[in-house]
Structure formats: C-alpha cells, structure tokens
Amino acid sequence: MSGIVIAEFGLLILFPFLMAYAAASDLLTMLIPNRITLALILGFVLLAASGLLTPGEIGLHVGAAFIVLAATFTLFALNVIGGGDAKLAAATTLWLGFDGLLDYLLVASIFGGALTLAILLARSHPLPGRLARLPFALHLHDAKTGIPYGIALSAAALVVVPDTALWSVVTVG
Figure 1 (tube, rainbow, N blue to C red):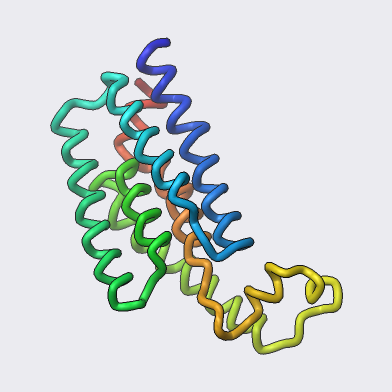
Figure 2 (cartoon, rainbow, N blue to C red; figure 1 turned 180 degrees about the horizontal axis):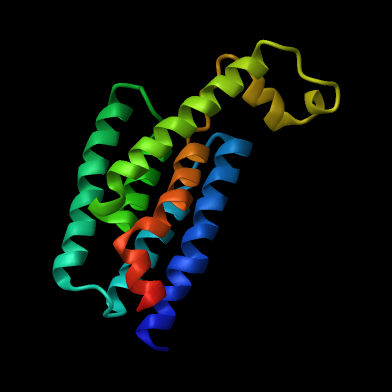
C-alpha cells in the first residue's frame, strides 16, 4: 500500500471517524475512552511512516502535541477539564500541528462556550417525557454533571483540519 493511500485513509477516514466516536462517547457516557486517544496516536504514527512528512515536520507535530498535553494536564490537575478531554486535545493536536493549533483552540473555545450555554439553558428546564427515559439524557441534564467538552474538541478538529499543512500534503500530495 502506497504512502499516499495510507495518509489519505488516515486523514480522510480514520481521523474524522475517531473525532465522531469521541464526541458521541462523551455525549453518551461523559467519558472519552483511552482507545480513541491511542488510535489517534497510532494513526498519526502510520501517517508519519508514510513518508509524506519530513522528520522536521513530524517533530513539529509531536512538539505541538506535547505542549497541549502539558497545558491540558495542568488544567486537569486544577479540575478545570476532564482527563479524557486533555488526552483528546493533545492527540488531536498531533494531527493538526502548530499551523492548526491556534485555530483549533479558538474554534474549540467558541464551540465549547456555545455547548456549555446550550446545556446550562437545557438544564434550567425540565426534560421532556421521552428524553427523561434516556439514562444519558438524565445524566447530562444533572447539574452535578460536567460538560461533554469532547464534542467541542472533536467538532473544532473537523473544522480546522482542512486548513492545515498536513491536509494540503495529503490531499494534494
């Protein structure tokens, strides 16, 4: 299998699938399984091994991911975000690199703010009868439950990735 086919599969199929899976999992369970983060890392390793990125470019992607990991784990330690969110943000940044990092953080902040406001507004009203029978809806509606920020992180990644250098390398390649 050629490097371009591996890279295209990773960026056009695997990455969007894992973002959707992370968002759905966070919505339904308020957890982002480690297997999603590990699959993102492994997928990037395969993409990096495809030969489409230089060692320097790979290093920059890894560096961006480590900076985000340090920042998000600090936020996790301060009980600001969940551990799954911290790991997802770092693994996602591995794919986006520095060129997509600021846009990713900005879009994730906007989406996260909108998501938070929507959930807080929904929590201020009783759940409709049909929704009140769904365990995930009851859990999400509970004021003691956090915000499934993985939804915002995943959506932001899907919005930002087409503007990254990696996208240009793979889709124009």
